[in-house]
Image (cartoon, rainbow, N blue to C red; front, side, top):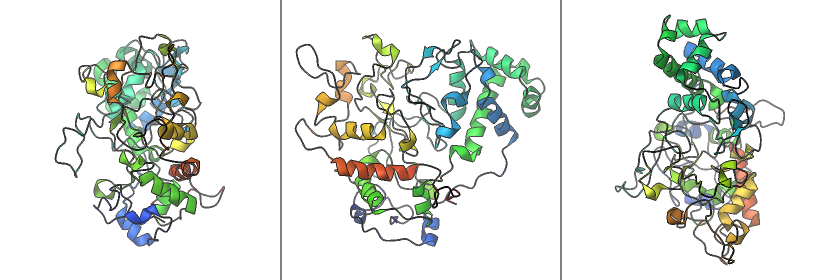
Amino acid sequence: MAQPPAAGDPGTGNGAGVPAAASTAAMPAVSKVSVQRWVRYPVSATELSPSAKLGKQIFFDASLSASGKMSCASCHSPEHAYGPPNGLAVQLGGPDMRQPGTRAVPSLRYLNFTPLFSRHFYTPASEDTEDEGPTGGFMQDGSAASLHEQAALPLLNSNEMANAGAAAVVAKVEHSAYADTFKKVFGAQIFSQTDQAFAHIGEALEAFQIEDVSFHPYTSKFDAAMSGNADFTAQELRGYALFNNPDKGNCAKCHLDMPGPGGRPAQFADFSFAALGVPRNPAIPANRDPKYFDLGLCGPYRHDLAKETDFCGMFKSPTLRNAATRSVFFHNGRFHSLEQAMRFYVERDTNPRKWYPKLAHGKIDKFDDLPIRYRENIDVADAPLNRKPGDKPALNEAEIRDVIAFLQTLNDGYSATPGGPKVQAR
Protein backbone atom coordinates (compact mmCIF):
# COMPACT_ATOMS: atom_id res chain seq x y z
CA MET A 1 0.00 0.00 0.00
CA ALA A 2 1.21 3.52 -0.74
CA GLN A 3 3.21 5.37 1.89
CA PRO A 4 1.54 8.74 2.64
CA PRO A 5 3.49 11.84 3.61
CA ALA A 6 2.99 13.38 7.02
CA ALA A 7 -0.11 15.54 7.48
CA GLY A 8 0.35 18.89 5.79
CA ASP A 9 3.43 17.66 3.89
CA PRO A 10 3.07 17.82 0.11
CA GLY A 11 5.42 14.87 -0.20
CA THR A 12 8.94 14.52 -1.52
CA GLY A 13 10.50 13.62 -4.80
CA ASN A 14 7.69 14.66 -7.15
CA GLY A 15 5.67 17.17 -5.15
CA ALA A 16 2.46 15.31 -5.87
CA GLY A 17 1.76 13.68 -2.54
CA VAL A 18 3.63 10.42 -3.16
CA PRO A 19 7.21 10.07 -1.92
CA ALA A 20 10.11 9.42 -4.25
CA ALA A 21 9.96 5.78 -3.26
CA ALA A 22 6.68 5.54 -5.14
CA SER A 23 8.61 5.43 -8.40
CA THR A 24 9.24 1.77 -7.70
CA ALA A 25 6.79 -1.02 -7.02
CA ALA A 26 8.26 -1.52 -3.56
CA MET A 27 6.11 0.90 -1.60
CA PRO A 28 6.15 0.26 2.17
CA ALA A 29 3.02 -0.68 4.03
CA VAL A 30 1.37 1.75 6.41
CA SER A 31 -0.51 0.84 9.53
CA LYS A 32 -4.25 1.37 9.56
CA VAL A 33 -3.95 3.68 12.56
CA SER A 34 -1.42 6.02 10.94
CA VAL A 35 -3.44 6.24 7.71
CA GLN A 36 -6.63 7.06 9.54
CA ARG A 37 -4.83 9.94 11.23
CA TRP A 38 -3.56 11.13 7.87
CA VAL A 39 -6.87 11.08 5.97
CA ARG A 40 -10.07 12.33 7.61
CA TYR A 41 -13.02 10.91 5.71
CA PRO A 42 -16.26 12.84 6.33
CA VAL A 43 -19.00 11.34 8.44
CA SER A 44 -22.30 11.26 6.58
CA ALA A 45 -25.53 12.53 8.07
CA THR A 46 -27.80 9.72 9.26
CA GLU A 47 -30.82 11.50 7.79
CA LEU A 48 -31.24 14.17 5.19
CA SER A 49 -32.46 17.59 6.26
CA PRO A 50 -35.96 18.66 5.11
CA SER A 51 -34.36 20.85 2.44
CA ALA A 52 -32.20 18.00 1.15
CA LYS A 53 -35.21 15.65 1.06
CA LEU A 54 -36.99 18.22 -1.10
CA GLY A 55 -33.90 18.48 -3.28
CA LYS A 56 -33.99 14.74 -3.84
CA GLN A 57 -37.60 14.91 -5.01
CA ILE A 58 -36.79 17.80 -7.31
CA PHE A 59 -33.72 16.00 -8.69
CA PHE A 60 -35.79 13.05 -9.90
CA ASP A 61 -38.87 15.01 -11.02
CA ALA A 62 -39.19 14.90 -14.82
CA SER A 63 -42.37 17.03 -14.70
CA LEU A 64 -40.18 20.08 -14.05
CA SER A 65 -38.98 20.03 -17.66
CA ALA A 66 -40.78 21.52 -20.65
CA SER A 67 -40.99 18.07 -22.21
CA GLY A 68 -42.15 16.39 -19.01
CA LYS A 69 -39.57 13.70 -19.75
CA MET A 70 -36.27 15.05 -18.41
CA SER A 71 -35.13 15.31 -14.81
CA CYS A 72 -31.70 16.13 -13.39
CA ALA A 73 -31.18 12.39 -13.06
CA SER A 74 -31.77 11.87 -16.78
CA CYS A 75 -28.31 13.22 -17.54
CA HIS A 76 -26.75 12.70 -14.10
CA SER A 77 -27.60 9.07 -13.49
CA PRO A 78 -26.98 7.75 -9.96
CA GLU A 79 -26.16 4.37 -11.51
CA HIS A 80 -23.39 6.01 -13.56
CA ALA A 81 -21.64 8.00 -10.81
CA TYR A 82 -24.07 10.87 -11.49
CA GLY A 83 -22.73 11.15 -15.02
CA PRO A 84 -24.37 10.44 -18.38
CA PRO A 85 -26.13 7.08 -18.72
CA ASN A 86 -24.93 6.50 -22.29
CA GLY A 87 -22.05 7.10 -24.66
CA LEU A 88 -23.52 10.08 -26.49
CA ALA A 89 -21.11 12.99 -26.87
CA VAL A 90 -23.94 15.36 -25.90
CA GLN A 91 -27.40 14.65 -24.53
CA LEU A 92 -30.75 15.50 -26.11
CA GLY A 93 -33.25 17.79 -24.39
CA GLY A 94 -35.46 20.76 -25.07
CA PRO A 95 -39.27 20.85 -25.22
CA ASP A 96 -39.33 17.96 -27.72
CA MET A 97 -36.32 16.03 -26.36
CA ARG A 98 -34.61 16.47 -29.72
CA GLN A 99 -32.36 19.45 -29.03
CA PRO A 100 -28.69 18.43 -28.72
CA GLY A 101 -26.41 20.05 -26.20
CA THR A 102 -22.94 21.34 -27.03
CA ARG A 103 -20.89 19.88 -24.17
CA ALA A 104 -20.50 16.44 -22.67
CA VAL A 105 -22.26 15.93 -19.34
CA PRO A 106 -19.87 15.89 -16.36
CA SER A 107 -20.32 13.89 -13.18
CA LEU A 108 -21.87 15.58 -10.15
CA ARG A 109 -19.80 13.55 -7.72
CA TYR A 110 -17.13 15.13 -5.53
CA LEU A 111 -18.02 18.76 -6.19
CA ASN A 112 -18.55 19.83 -2.58
CA PHE A 113 -14.99 21.12 -2.06
CA THR A 114 -14.94 23.21 -5.24
CA PRO A 115 -13.60 26.72 -4.48
CA LEU A 116 -14.98 29.96 -5.84
CA PHE A 117 -13.78 30.90 -9.29
CA SER A 118 -10.58 32.93 -9.39
CA ARG A 119 -8.48 34.17 -12.28
CA HIS A 120 -5.35 33.18 -10.39
CA PHE A 121 -4.64 29.73 -8.97
CA TYR A 122 -2.82 29.92 -5.64
CA THR A 123 -0.27 27.28 -4.70
CA PRO A 124 1.60 27.42 -1.38
CA ALA A 125 4.84 26.65 -3.22
CA SER A 126 4.60 29.84 -5.25
CA GLU A 127 4.39 33.42 -4.07
CA ASP A 128 3.61 34.54 -7.61
CA THR A 129 -0.03 33.77 -8.28
CA GLU A 130 -0.20 35.80 -11.47
CA ASP A 131 1.14 33.01 -13.67
CA GLU A 132 -0.79 30.12 -12.21
CA GLY A 133 -4.01 30.48 -14.22
CA PRO A 134 -7.71 30.35 -13.33
CA THR A 135 -9.32 27.90 -10.94
CA GLY A 136 -12.62 26.98 -9.30
CA GLY A 137 -16.27 27.61 -9.98
CA PHE A 138 -18.93 25.17 -11.19
CA MET A 139 -19.78 24.10 -14.74
CA GLN A 140 -17.04 23.29 -17.24
CA ASP A 141 -16.34 27.00 -17.68
CA GLY A 142 -16.51 27.85 -13.97
CA SER A 143 -19.37 30.27 -14.61
CA ALA A 144 -21.56 29.19 -11.66
CA ALA A 145 -20.50 30.48 -8.26
CA SER A 146 -22.16 27.78 -6.18
CA LEU A 147 -23.81 24.38 -6.33
CA HIS A 148 -27.26 25.94 -5.99
CA GLU A 149 -26.60 28.30 -8.89
CA GLN A 150 -25.25 25.44 -10.99
CA ALA A 151 -28.18 23.20 -10.06
CA ALA A 152 -30.73 25.75 -11.32
CA LEU A 153 -29.12 26.40 -14.70
CA PRO A 154 -30.28 23.21 -16.51
CA LEU A 155 -33.88 24.07 -15.61
CA LEU A 156 -33.71 27.06 -17.95
CA ASN A 157 -31.28 25.84 -20.60
CA SER A 158 -33.01 25.52 -23.97
CA ASN A 159 -31.11 22.31 -24.74
CA GLU A 160 -31.97 20.72 -21.42
CA MET A 161 -35.12 21.15 -19.32
CA ALA A 162 -36.02 24.20 -21.41
CA ASN A 163 -38.36 26.11 -19.09
CA ALA A 164 -39.29 29.59 -20.31
CA GLY A 165 -38.22 31.20 -17.05
CA ALA A 166 -38.10 30.93 -13.28
CA ALA A 167 -41.86 31.48 -13.01
CA ALA A 168 -42.55 28.39 -15.13
CA VAL A 169 -40.40 26.23 -12.85
CA VAL A 170 -41.96 27.62 -9.69
CA ALA A 171 -45.46 27.01 -11.05
CA LYS A 172 -44.59 23.37 -11.68
CA VAL A 173 -43.25 22.93 -8.16
CA GLU A 174 -46.40 24.61 -6.82
CA HIS A 175 -48.49 21.93 -8.51
CA SER A 176 -46.20 19.04 -7.59
CA ALA A 177 -46.88 16.29 -5.07
CA TYR A 178 -44.36 17.91 -2.71
CA ALA A 179 -45.74 21.46 -2.89
CA ASP A 180 -47.02 21.39 0.71
CA THR A 181 -43.65 20.18 1.93
CA PHE A 182 -41.99 23.01 0.00
CA LYS A 183 -44.24 25.50 1.81
CA LYS A 184 -43.50 23.93 5.18
CA VAL A 185 -39.76 24.23 4.60
CA PHE A 186 -39.64 27.67 2.96
CA GLY A 187 -42.80 29.43 4.11
CA ALA A 188 -46.54 29.34 3.46
CA GLN A 189 -46.42 32.28 1.04
CA ILE A 190 -43.29 31.19 -0.83
CA PHE A 191 -45.04 30.55 -4.16
CA SER A 192 -46.09 34.20 -4.33
CA GLN A 193 -42.40 35.16 -4.32
CA THR A 194 -41.17 33.76 -7.62
CA ASP A 195 -37.51 34.78 -7.45
CA GLN A 196 -37.15 33.59 -3.86
CA ALA A 197 -38.92 30.32 -4.59
CA PHE A 198 -36.67 29.65 -7.59
CA ALA A 199 -33.61 30.35 -5.46
CA HIS A 200 -34.87 27.86 -2.87
CA ILE A 201 -35.23 25.20 -5.57
CA GLY A 202 -31.53 25.55 -6.28
CA GLU A 203 -30.72 25.56 -2.57
CA ALA A 204 -32.70 22.35 -2.05
CA LEU A 205 -30.82 20.68 -4.91
CA GLU A 206 -27.56 21.86 -3.39
CA ALA A 207 -28.51 20.48 0.03
CA PHE A 208 -29.28 17.10 -1.54
CA GLN A 209 -25.90 16.99 -3.26
CA ILE A 210 -24.03 18.02 -0.13
CA GLU A 211 -25.83 15.78 2.35
CA ASP A 212 -26.53 12.61 0.40
CA VAL A 213 -23.55 10.26 0.66
CA SER A 214 -24.12 8.97 -2.88
CA PHE A 215 -22.56 12.18 -4.22
CA HIS A 216 -19.33 11.59 -2.29
CA PRO A 217 -19.24 7.98 -1.09
CA TYR A 218 -15.46 7.46 -0.97
CA THR A 219 -15.91 3.71 -1.53
CA SER A 220 -13.12 3.21 -4.08
CA LYS A 221 -10.26 0.77 -3.68
CA PHE A 222 -7.96 3.78 -3.37
CA ASP A 223 -9.93 4.96 -0.35
CA ALA A 224 -9.97 1.45 1.10
CA ALA A 225 -6.19 1.33 0.71
CA MET A 226 -5.78 4.74 2.31
CA SER A 227 -7.89 3.48 5.21
CA GLY A 228 -5.77 0.37 5.62
CA ASN A 229 -8.50 -1.94 4.31
CA ALA A 230 -6.96 -2.97 0.99
CA ASP A 231 -3.63 -3.32 -0.80
CA PHE A 232 -2.79 -2.24 -4.32
CA THR A 233 -1.64 -4.87 -6.80
CA ALA A 234 1.83 -4.62 -8.34
CA GLN A 235 0.29 -3.28 -11.56
CA GLU A 236 -1.76 -0.67 -9.70
CA LEU A 237 1.36 0.47 -7.85
CA ARG A 238 3.27 0.81 -11.10
CA GLY A 239 0.39 2.83 -12.50
CA TYR A 240 0.30 4.99 -9.38
CA ALA A 241 4.02 5.74 -9.77
CA LEU A 242 3.53 6.66 -13.44
CA PHE A 243 0.48 8.77 -12.50
CA ASN A 244 2.75 10.86 -10.28
CA ASN A 245 5.96 10.81 -12.32
CA PRO A 246 6.34 14.35 -13.77
CA ASP A 247 8.18 12.98 -16.81
CA LYS A 248 5.71 10.20 -17.56
CA GLY A 249 1.95 10.37 -16.89
CA ASN A 250 2.23 13.57 -14.86
CA CYS A 251 -1.48 13.18 -14.07
CA ALA A 252 -1.09 14.41 -10.50
CA LYS A 253 -0.10 17.87 -11.71
CA CYS A 254 -3.80 18.65 -12.15
CA HIS A 255 -5.44 15.65 -10.51
CA LEU A 256 -4.00 15.86 -7.01
CA ASP A 257 -3.79 12.58 -5.13
CA MET A 258 -2.86 14.05 -1.77
CA PRO A 259 -5.21 15.10 1.04
CA GLY A 260 -6.47 18.64 1.16
CA PRO A 261 -6.70 21.05 4.11
CA GLY A 262 -7.42 19.34 7.41
CA GLY A 263 -6.63 15.95 5.92
CA ARG A 264 -9.71 15.87 3.71
CA PRO A 265 -9.62 12.95 1.24
CA ALA A 266 -7.85 13.33 -2.08
CA GLN A 267 -10.21 14.80 -4.66
CA PHE A 268 -8.07 13.92 -7.70
CA ALA A 269 -8.72 17.43 -9.00
CA ASP A 270 -7.14 20.81 -8.34
CA PHE A 271 -10.10 22.64 -9.95
CA SER A 272 -7.78 24.32 -12.45
CA PHE A 273 -8.40 24.97 -16.14
CA ALA A 274 -6.44 23.69 -19.10
CA ALA A 275 -6.43 24.00 -22.89
CA LEU A 276 -5.64 20.52 -24.17
CA GLY A 277 -6.38 20.84 -27.86
CA VAL A 278 -8.91 18.02 -27.96
CA PRO A 279 -9.89 17.33 -31.60
CA ARG A 280 -13.15 18.78 -32.89
CA ASN A 281 -16.03 16.37 -32.48
CA PRO A 282 -18.20 15.97 -35.60
CA ALA A 283 -20.83 14.18 -33.49
CA ILE A 284 -21.86 17.55 -31.99
CA PRO A 285 -24.39 19.16 -34.37
CA ALA A 286 -23.25 22.68 -33.46
CA ASN A 287 -19.83 21.85 -34.92
CA ARG A 288 -21.33 21.55 -38.41
CA ASP A 289 -21.06 25.33 -38.50
CA PRO A 290 -17.38 26.01 -39.26
CA LYS A 291 -17.68 29.38 -37.53
CA TYR A 292 -18.84 27.84 -34.24
CA PHE A 293 -16.24 27.24 -31.55
CA ASP A 294 -16.62 26.39 -27.89
CA LEU A 295 -13.98 28.56 -26.23
CA GLY A 296 -14.63 27.45 -22.65
CA LEU A 297 -13.74 30.30 -20.32
CA CYS A 298 -14.11 32.79 -23.20
CA GLY A 299 -17.59 31.72 -24.29
CA PRO A 300 -20.05 31.16 -25.79
CA TYR A 301 -21.86 30.62 -22.47
CA ARG A 302 -19.57 32.69 -20.29
CA HIS A 303 -19.30 36.37 -21.21
CA ASP A 304 -17.34 38.09 -18.44
CA LEU A 305 -13.99 36.69 -19.64
CA ALA A 306 -14.51 37.20 -23.37
CA LYS A 307 -11.61 39.66 -23.51
CA GLU A 308 -9.27 37.37 -21.55
CA THR A 309 -7.97 35.80 -24.74
CA ASP A 310 -5.24 33.88 -22.90
CA PHE A 311 -8.04 31.78 -21.39
CA CYS A 312 -9.70 30.83 -24.69
CA GLY A 313 -9.89 27.07 -25.07
CA MET A 314 -9.59 26.36 -21.36
CA PHE A 315 -11.97 23.99 -19.55
CA LYS A 316 -12.02 22.87 -15.95
CA SER A 317 -10.06 19.74 -15.10
CA PRO A 318 -12.52 17.20 -13.63
CA THR A 319 -11.93 14.77 -10.83
CA LEU A 320 -10.58 11.41 -11.97
CA ARG A 321 -12.69 9.58 -9.41
CA ASN A 322 -14.93 7.19 -11.38
CA ALA A 323 -13.31 8.30 -14.65
CA ALA A 324 -12.84 4.64 -15.60
CA THR A 325 -16.62 4.16 -15.50
CA ARG A 326 -17.30 6.86 -18.11
CA SER A 327 -17.93 6.37 -21.81
CA VAL A 328 -17.48 10.03 -22.83
CA PHE A 329 -14.34 12.07 -22.16
CA PHE A 330 -13.34 15.72 -22.32
CA HIS A 331 -15.64 18.72 -22.68
CA ASN A 332 -16.78 17.73 -26.19
CA GLY A 333 -17.12 13.99 -25.61
CA ARG A 334 -14.63 13.32 -28.41
CA PHE A 335 -13.37 10.04 -26.93
CA HIS A 336 -15.38 7.12 -25.65
CA SER A 337 -12.96 5.04 -23.60
CA LEU A 338 -10.26 5.66 -21.06
CA GLU A 339 -7.81 3.93 -23.40
CA GLN A 340 -8.58 6.43 -26.18
CA ALA A 341 -8.22 9.37 -23.80
CA MET A 342 -4.89 8.08 -22.49
CA ARG A 343 -3.50 7.47 -25.96
CA PHE A 344 -4.52 10.97 -27.02
CA TYR A 345 -2.55 12.43 -24.12
CA VAL A 346 0.62 10.53 -24.95
CA GLU A 347 0.38 10.67 -28.77
CA ARG A 348 -1.18 14.08 -29.37
CA ASP A 349 2.19 15.60 -30.25
CA THR A 350 4.25 12.57 -31.26
CA ASN A 351 1.72 11.46 -33.89
CA PRO A 352 -0.71 14.34 -34.55
CA ARG A 353 -1.90 12.90 -37.88
CA LYS A 354 -3.61 10.15 -35.86
CA TRP A 355 -5.85 12.68 -34.10
CA TYR A 356 -6.35 15.67 -36.38
CA PRO A 357 -7.65 16.10 -39.97
CA LYS A 358 -5.52 16.89 -42.96
CA LEU A 359 -6.05 20.19 -44.79
CA ALA A 360 -6.38 20.39 -48.58
CA HIS A 361 -2.67 21.16 -49.04
CA GLY A 362 -1.68 18.18 -46.89
CA LYS A 363 -0.80 19.94 -43.63
CA ILE A 364 -2.24 18.50 -40.41
CA ASP A 365 -4.80 20.86 -38.86
CA LYS A 366 -3.54 20.40 -35.31
CA PHE A 367 -5.77 21.75 -32.53
CA ASP A 368 -8.60 22.09 -35.05
CA ASP A 369 -11.29 22.81 -32.43
CA LEU A 370 -9.88 26.29 -31.72
CA PRO A 371 -9.48 29.29 -34.00
CA ILE A 372 -5.85 29.61 -35.09
CA ARG A 373 -5.36 32.81 -33.09
CA TYR A 374 -6.00 30.95 -29.82
CA ARG A 375 -3.97 27.82 -30.47
CA GLU A 376 -0.97 29.23 -28.67
CA ASN A 377 -2.97 28.76 -25.46
CA ILE A 378 -2.73 24.97 -25.78
CA ASP A 379 -0.56 23.29 -23.17
CA VAL A 380 2.64 22.11 -24.85
CA ALA A 381 4.90 22.51 -21.81
CA ASP A 382 3.76 19.81 -19.41
CA ALA A 383 4.45 16.11 -19.88
CA PRO A 384 3.15 14.12 -21.63
CA LEU A 385 2.10 17.01 -23.89
CA ASN A 386 5.61 18.37 -24.41
CA ARG A 387 6.77 16.03 -27.17
CA LYS A 388 7.32 16.64 -30.87
CA PRO A 389 6.47 14.56 -33.95
CA GLY A 390 8.76 11.56 -34.08
CA ASP A 391 9.59 11.68 -30.36
CA LYS A 392 9.02 8.61 -28.24
CA PRO A 393 5.68 8.88 -26.39
CA ALA A 394 5.93 9.51 -22.65
CA LEU A 395 4.17 6.20 -21.94
CA ASN A 396 4.39 2.92 -23.81
CA GLU A 397 1.51 0.46 -24.18
CA ALA A 398 2.36 -1.46 -21.02
CA GLU A 399 2.63 1.76 -19.04
CA ILE A 400 -0.72 2.99 -20.36
CA ARG A 401 -2.29 -0.25 -19.12
CA ASP A 402 -0.64 0.25 -15.74
CA VAL A 403 -1.99 3.80 -15.39
CA ILE A 404 -5.46 2.61 -16.35
CA ALA A 405 -5.23 -0.13 -13.73
CA PHE A 406 -4.54 2.54 -11.12
CA LEU A 407 -7.34 4.79 -12.38
CA GLN A 408 -9.72 1.87 -11.98
CA THR A 409 -8.93 1.91 -8.24
CA LEU A 410 -10.71 5.30 -8.15
CA ASN A 411 -14.08 3.75 -9.04
CA ASP A 412 -16.56 3.80 -6.17
CA GLY A 413 -18.20 0.56 -5.10
CA TYR A 414 -15.07 -1.43 -4.28
CA SER A 415 -15.57 -4.73 -2.51
CA ALA A 416 -12.72 -6.89 -1.22
CA THR A 417 -14.85 -9.89 -2.20
CA PRO A 418 -16.62 -9.87 -5.58
CA GLY A 419 -20.32 -9.54 -4.86
CA GLY A 420 -19.61 -8.65 -1.26
CA PRO A 421 -20.31 -5.43 0.65
CA LYS A 422 -18.63 -2.20 -0.34
CA VAL A 423 -15.55 -1.35 1.69
CA GLN A 424 -16.20 1.96 3.41
CA ALA A 425 -13.33 4.42 3.82
CA ARG A 426 -14.45 5.46 7.27
